[in-house]
Image (cartoon, rainbow, N blue to C red; front, top):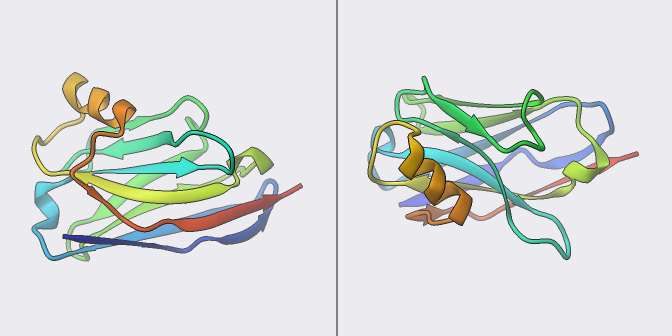
Length: 130
């Protein structure tokens, strides 16, 4: 299974950006999808998670209300819409997947907080200027 993130770039504070993550080599509808980020000199941070159906979401506190995860199962792609961007959102963003499970329940959330993913993609750089 391969995950390829794209859509990163340079944006001014207050702006928006949408990241995409294309999944290949597996059955996309079998995966709970998520996004993480890592800023220079900082630990990896959980951003958000999305159930297989797209009905359940869960976000990290730092992005709640500003970022939205969605998926298009016909295109095998998950998206991260980022609004009201701040300089502290600058990081490399990674998509990831959990193979088992369907909904974003307690056990799944714990796996995301621990970074216990079955698949990781390569990151895409997002830089927010002040």
